[in-house]
Image 1 (tube, rainbow, N blue to C red):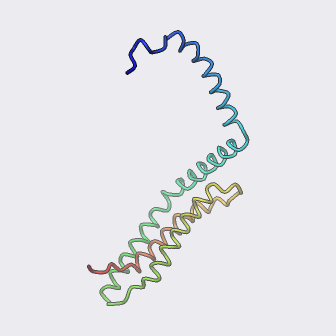
Image 2: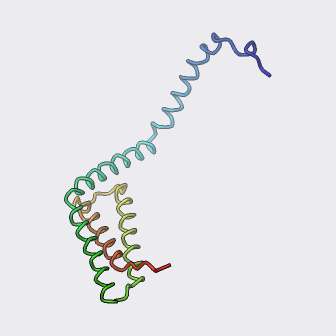
Image 3: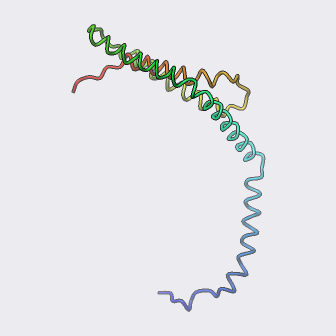
Length: 143
């Protein structure tokens, strides 16, 4: 079992620390100052800008999204009272399309090309409309 007497002296550790710090600084500079990492950093800045643009539209679109989902819930209620059948294929279609639009918007955030600004107003509304259609065709089976 090692003892305290076997530990290196503090003077030896203080002589090595500046050399290790210099070498780590050089490695860090070589690793992160190349064009590849700078381009990834630029893509992240672009994604943050586009996400901020999406958030700017959120106060204007949440009312529409809420109205769409409430309409879908009322349509489900009406279908249940009329004994109309729910369509599981349409539920799957609209839920898949909502997921596809969500994933496409995430990819569009890091797309290096230019995109029209109104796209960020359309995305939440389109997702809400697709989710509302999926909700209107959803039927929970009894256990």
